[in-house]
Length: 73
Image 1 (tube, rainbow, N blue to C red):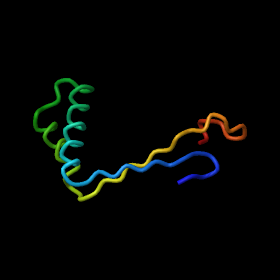
Image 2 (tube, rainbow, N blue to C red):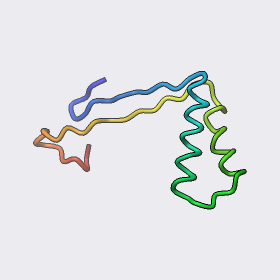
Image 3 (cartoon, rainbow, N blue to C red):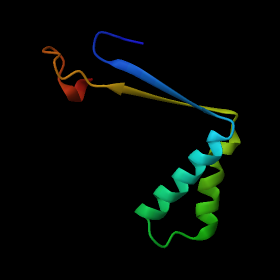
Image 4 (tube, rainbow, N blue to C red):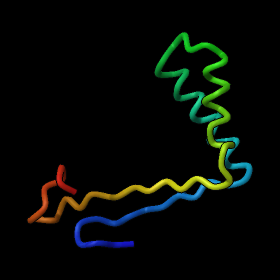
């Protein structure tokens, strides 16, 4: 999907990929917050399992757009 300022990208996470994504979330939390209790890591690991489908949206900045600065995109 494209608009005048940037291009949208969508990532869909479903099925067993949700389990893998939960592992990534838990690993990221452990790396950024050392000493996180195991119960909190387990809760983070199960977050993606609360739904059947996750949709992540991102936008790529267009640095060649003369009228719209990056912070406004």
